[in-house]
Amino acid sequence: MSESVPVRCPVCRREHLYVAPTYPCACGAPIAPPLEPGARAVTHQVWEEAWVTVECALCGRRSEWPHPELGCACGTVLRIAVTADVRAAAEKSRSAGSPPPAEIPAANPAPPRRAFQPITIRTARDAVTVAALYLRWLGYQDIRRADQRPPSGIGLAARGLLAQVDPTVRPASPRDVECLWLTSMTESAHCVYFSLAGYTTEARTRADTLGVPLFVLDLTGTPQPVNALADKLSNT
Image (cartoon, rainbow, N blue to C red):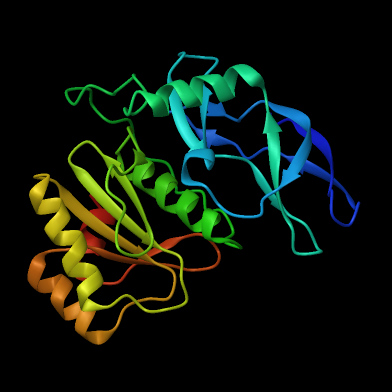
């Protein structure tokens, strides 16, 4: 069960009760970041501070997930405090420049896939979380932030895969699709694109030519296939 902590906005002094989100571990157990009372206002986003390492109590596997945040009614973004040992583990993982140590062996058969559980998208972070959860639902268990930042949006990576998440209100362009495809080619990986605002007609045509699956993120938190490649991927 997700834990909850009282949080006071340092700007408007409103009181909130924050409930930690629950994420699916690769072993199937639900995990949630351990919280501490208190939060601080986020004045600007720093990529290294936007992730936290969470350890599964069942199998001991460590995975990186977005750092818990809450949007106050006054417009302030609050970053919820997590326990010190979790923060230290996250910093150690980032300083080593590597993803969490545990990986799922490729030879292991995948269990029957359950229905995807969406998360309502209210912020750019929610869009990234939904994309990461969806990739895990597809079978990519070692999701992490990409080594190279894309020209726009946020990059995610897994073994043999690069994903780009564009949470802006601008439809993705052919250049966006081409940049993702070129980066994936240099790393000998497949690629997939998630966009909150959809794609231009030219971008869809270019994606079909290059073999890039396209998904659009609706506000209910369910990625919807845009082209045949994405439809095939979601049904595999």
